[in-house]
Length: 213
Image (cartoon, rainbow, N blue to C red; front, side, top):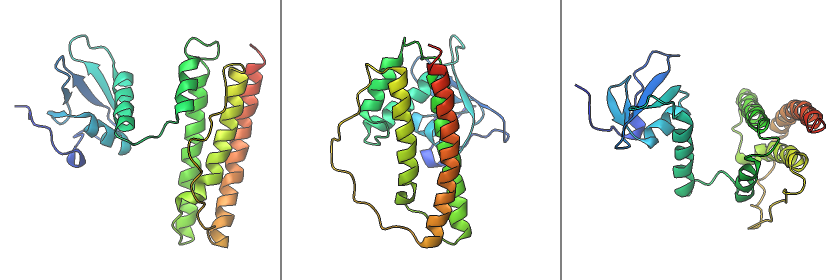
């Protein structure tokens, strides 16, 4: 018999074979049922599964419609409403402005490439610092973030030059952290060079597509 109780988020188990996609059913009463573990789960459980790279798909139990996108969006909404603000207001305004825009079809791919590049470089830098015996702080990634944001801003201007307006600073920037040791800085510079090259290639693709409008 299925377990009708939800376990604590930290103990949520997918009970699926590694590499196998977990099927989640959403019922009319908004309850989510993990068919792999035969237990009810919450959005918090699903968020933990995402962080553990557990692949899953969510279906409406009545219509069998794939509603994974809406559930993931709901997870983001819950995180944002609880103070885990990750998406700047101006960024959200820009996203809304792209619905129905002629470049709407291209934007998802651009965002995926940008985030994939950021994640890849972040992991590479962690490995480099680990090899050097250092633990990178948040400040180490500041330049990388600035590079990504600068390229994204340029892309926004090309996609929607009249609607785009840079966000005004709502609060003073955080105090910069002390620079990392010389060896660690050299490792981060190497990673940033690789990131810059990837982002420049992406920028060239954007300019080419924007010129075809």
